[in-house]
Length: 96
Image (cartoon, rainbow, N blue to C red; front, top):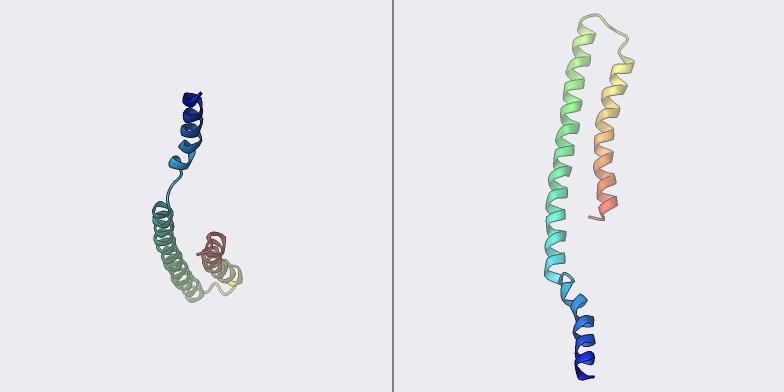
């Protein structure tokens, strides 16, 4: 009878040992924060590159005599805005 009780206590204590501790959870959060800010910085750089490349392309088209560039302006502008908003959305999604 004692063996059965000892076995039951041992089995019920096993899941508690398998759970990650506070240190592991803090380490995972720290890694997520570091990775997220690297990705957010990358999104800012991409938005800047989209804006600069779009400005150069639009300026070239304007100088070549193509004065109907409304679609190109809106396309490059909205591409940069989309990248910036995706970074903000990820910040809200992960709560960082």
